[in-house]
Image (cartoon, rainbow, N blue to C red):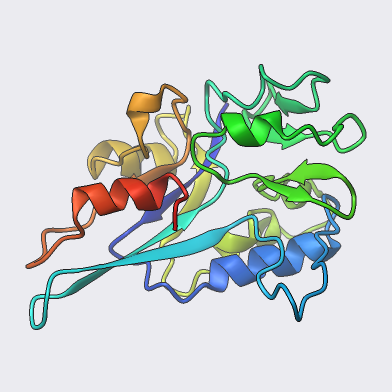
Length: 220
């Protein structure tokens, strides 16, 4: 089993609902809190899911790409083997990559190893934190079935995000990837991310490939 989220880039409108709902849930969830240090001086705080955008072309043939970016829960997660205490680990039963806060010593080696720049250091607690795929919600049997999914998926107003088991060929996410040519970000880096995106349909103007590479590697 490999749990994942598939994002349809044709449907994402950059509303940041997934970003805000992730922040809201993980501030008080089982894998929180996610504190904002001096929020007025640093309004961004810690965000495990960020929506990044890139404009391309010129009027009237302009285009905008919105791309949600969080932990990719990679099959070959490079953050796992570099961790000296085993705090970063990949669950064998569902493929979710997590951080054991009790074992994390805050060395940040996993942050350097992550090719997507989606881990953040919590200076207050001295540990690294990131997207957990809301595994606490998924495994909470007290919740209604419709609530046992990542907060970002549940809150998306355009239903751009889909959650499921990528290793199950009959699952919705697996069918979407197969039927709509879902793609990984920067597959050449060898992490084999589980998170996939459904490609944009052709438009008059596309975001420059070099700019997109910069966007995907976190230099924004």
